[in-house]
Length: 613
Image 1 (cartoon, helix red, strand yellow):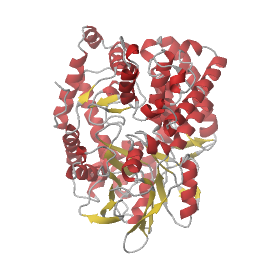
Image 2: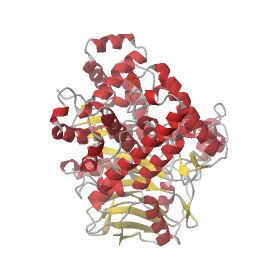
Image 3: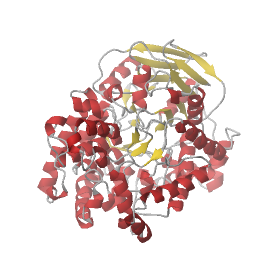
Image 4: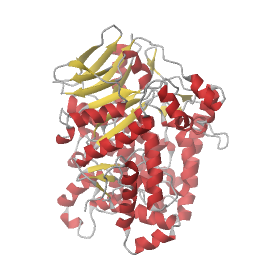
């Protein structure tokens, strides 16, 4: 069952069809022509739905919306929440209209007929975890799950959606998950006045498709899963686990540091600093999270237990990278302070970290003054991180400034915080006008690292120096690209590998499947889908790209605007030893590369997606 909930009328209607969550979202956005309205108009639908395959890793909750940050259609996923949501008997939900006062939406599937209600909640929220405690108190008698927003959703374009497994009226430590990319939390609050959604229902058995997996692999189901998810559980080779433990062993000197200034820092100095990242970041994590086996899952019974936590804090690579090395913080304990603060405030951690590193560089190069921002000047040069004492001292200082900046932006306590609520790209344009005397030879946006869309759209790339992360594709800020760092490919090859990944990623997301399970699921995806549906899932994925391209074409066009992004692409050709494109870029043929990537990308996806003439 699919439903459309109206926040203004506080009722719902049943919608026909049994669609997958992203398909459901884009079809409704197209039907209601939401591209015509502002992202915070009550007509901007907020959609979410669960996975359809009864497999381990198949119970993600998928959110879709017109993003206030990217400006086009976007989607984000939350682990495990679909496992409880399936008990409501609802497949997909769309929300329109706006509640008169801030409210909590309750979806109750306990009885024969679905019930919804809105509970007014007018208390000020300054801490998303304290808000969660209040929800637990209200619903502790229910076997429920909830997703909630925090302060950042009320005041910025970067609001994330938070959820945590609740068992016997208490949170399961380390199980928290976030659907953060694109500002979905901001849409839920600012367009619909909804602070969170609580859901519960009757326990319903699922179809067992274990035999399909075992027949294909000729192995026991659990063994198949564990063999294909080693990185996320525990790597015997590296003696660590999860994205945090493993990724730093791969990214090495290509790890984003000091607002992505790797191209301007000597490789040997980067490698020397990376040894300290392994010492003060990864080794501490291994000792406190891996050796202690502080591992759990996202809320569905999954043996991968990818959630690694320590001191009550869930630790993943991207939030800690964006708010660690990227902002000049190389001490795990200092990064804890930053990440916990931005989580508490309900920010997309990647987006905030990238914005923070942008502001830090502007303070470092003098384009902004500390009194204009409201924080002290950060220590933002690698020469100040040569010895252990300085690394720890300066990391602590930078972390303290990041925390102050997060609070300034979340609570809009000064003018700078008010302009930062839009993200780095729009903030830069405002700063250009505000300080014309500072932009004679350079502009504020020259230092921002973001993917651009149309006049105002932007999103921070994932935290890898990968050329595919900076291409102006239909969806960025996720893994719908070729995200291998350290390689520079021919434009057509990059497009081919990006499209291959894009199809796999959007297929998994549209089915509500965790991407950590992709290695064992992808080879048998058609067989699994055939157990529950007669839809050709590859065709469905290709149609999705066409629909998103058509929708977004009403709003804007692809482009590469950021000078720092151009520098990362151009220097990537040199750093990753592609002599041909190094020479082409020296001749000024940058746009030629992007054009050729998009031509092949459009051809393979059968869409029209090219740079503005």
